[in-house]
Amino acid sequence: MPVAATAVVLVVVAAALLQRVASPYLDLPGLQTWSTIFVSLMIQATPFLLLGVVVSGGLAALVPPSFLARIIPRNPTLAVGAACSAGTLLPGCECGSVPISGRLVARGAPPAAALAFMLAAPAINPIVLLSTAVAFPGQPEVVVARFLASFATAMVVGLVWMRMGDDEALLRSLRRIQDRGDRLSTFVATTRHDFLHAGGYLVLGAALAATAQTLVPPSVIDTLAGNVVLAVLVLTVLALVLSICSEADAFVVAGLPQFPMVARLAFLVVGPVVDIKLIAMQAGVFGRRFVLRFAPLSLAVSLGFALLVGWWLL
Image 1: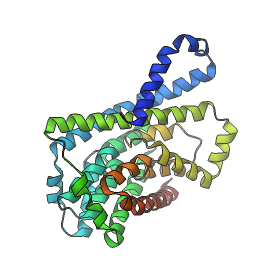
Image 2 (image 1 turned 90 degrees about the vertical axis):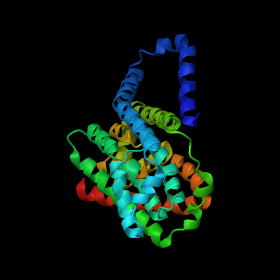
Image 3 (image 1 turned 90 degrees about the horizontal axis):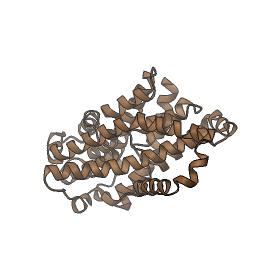
């Protein structure tokens, strides 16, 4: 069981065992505020999370990587554009996009295109864009900014890797990636895996957002949010550390309204591209040598486009 999901289970068990001891404190105003914020974030985000992992499991079971590899153009430049476009149509969690990109490489797709798909699919698919629109009602510019910055990130990283990347590292996927078996087994395994990973991190992210709104003194948040450079740095670091699923990250950052919109856009663009969870998964699929080059490139490009598009639109 993933670490985040294990932590959530342990917290629930501890809460049940310590219910009598903790009951006198449950009526504290601060705790009631915290629980209200936490529950509201979970209620908003969970339907999109469930929809995302079910669709991701269905795609893993019904759309074989060999089919995707056949329809991707052989011209590397056209292949990168096609892969980014495919990412807008095929919803998938970050957890599923990494092994899928490995299978694409293993079946002969241009490595740069497979990497572009890996970055685009979890960042700009319809479910993510819809959840962003719901999290930021009446602000369609946020959805547009997220789409443009994320699409540009996937394109540029793919094109840069095509010119300067180390494809030998990617070929490790030939040895590391294995199919799970029949379609039903693939669907069940993918859905369970993605839900445990994404659900656990969503709980941690919602808890952190509620804690920030409840316990952190307003003066501290105002200081961080009042300096744009510092705000962008803080939310970028949070995106790297929290590793929240892209179907739910918009609700978490929407719960931090004190921060400027450009900083929150950085959170939305950087998170699906590079975080601790993704770095670990990419190292497992493609090897450490690949991660040492790919992660800094992805971080620099995604943060750069978030700032550029945020300054332009927001």
